[in-house]
Every structure is written in structure tokens, then in C-alpha cells.
Length: 314
Image (cartoon, rainbow, N blue to C red):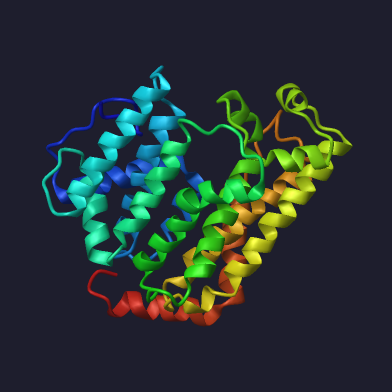
């Protein structure tokens, strides 16, 4: 079974590599306005790689988040088939899935460690059998594969040498995912999952029943403040590694970091009510964030413009 994250239909296996990359672009544009916005700020030769990375992740997410009434064991089976096809594509075999053809091309071109793919797929499999996390340490097992390794893959895509910034890249990936978890508390509950550690709920006297009812009171506010500070701490760790990113490619990463961190600001602005409305950053606000990031590092922008003028693909 092959799920199309762009629309739930079977993917066309007859696409060229360029068309496969464009499909990945359309998938990202359809499903992640914030990440797509920042991706468009990369130089032309980097953007397709990021599109492919996103589409690969989205494809796996769709299997577990929109399973089309598949039972859990069938979801696991589809994930295992998808993983096998992914690793075959990465090893150079021809596969029918155009998303995987583009992704495998990116993995090989950017020297992405196949071990990070295995770790990512293991976290996707966890979504078919783990629906609660007792402690934050338990959640970290999941977020390593679902988010930290995404940061590692992005390091390779933007040209950061292995090891130099890995801990900071991992922190950024997890911080961005925690921001999404806090925004999507109600949505995740409806899917039967809680990504807030149960020990944290207990610490503030907030129950699963309260979560089911969408209760926003002083207990929930205290819980959310605690989780927001945890995410902001990870953003600080990520910031310490931004200097490792090659000039001309740093700006989009900084913009993405700011936009995802702004989700936390929006949650605070709407008094922590993540049940009745989604904490979103408007397009004007995104443009303002991008302008502020550009103003804070004019040398980066100058280098990027100069690079685009001299690069044959710019």
C-alpha cells in the first residue's frame, strides 16, 4: 500500500528525478506553510534537497497520522514496507515511489548516514504501539528518531561537516517538534496520543480527563509554561551552533528557528488555549520575522546575494 501525502492516492511511479523533486516541493507546500516559507529562502541548489527531506518525513507521518482506517498491525506492516523500499532506494535500487527516488538521491549526494533513517523509522513505528510517555526521558527516546536525526540530516543538506554542530542540530530538531506538540495537544489527543510526559501532568495536577475536556485553568497554564521553558532551553542550545552553518545558508535555518519558536509566543498570546484555536504565525508575521533575521545578520545576507550571483545554479 502506497499512501500519497499530497492526497491519499497512489503515487505515479513514472516520474523523472526532476519531477520527483517537484512532487516533494508540492507536498511540502501543501502541508507545511511555515517550513516551506523558510525553505524558499535557501539557495536554489539546496531547496530541492530540503523538499525531498520533508516529503520523506511527511510520507511516513501520513501512514501513522492518517492511516485510512488501517489497524495498528497493518500500519506497522506498511511502515516496514516503506522502510525496506527506502533502504533499497538509498542503496541505489530503482523503486517506484518518486518521493523515495528524490530522497535517496539527496541521501547519497549529501552523505546522510543511513543510521539516521533507521532511527527515524523506529520512532514512526513507536507511534503504532506507544501512546503515552511516562517521563521526559521516555519521550526523548521518541524525539531522537522523530526530530533530532532530522536536524542531523539537515546539517548534511546545508553542508555542515559531521560532528561539528550535531548536538546543536539535534536540539533544534527537538525544540521545533516540542513546539508542534504544544500547539497540537488537542489534535494529538483526538488521535489517541499524548506527547506531554505524564509525570509533568501529575506534577501540576492535570489529568487525562482534563485534557479530553480541553480544560484551560491555572494547572494547565502552569504545565504549558513548564513545557515552553523546556523548549526554549533547547532553542538556546541550538543557537550556539548556528555559526557552524556555511554563510549563505544560515539565514533560512535562523528564520525557521524563529518561526517555530514564535509558535510558543502565540500560545502565550492566546492565554495557553490550544484547544479552541490553533497557534499559528500569520504570513505578515513571517515576513516580519524574516526581515528581522536579515537585519540582525547583514553579512550573511550579503554573502548569500554574492553567492547567488556567482553560482551557476543560483
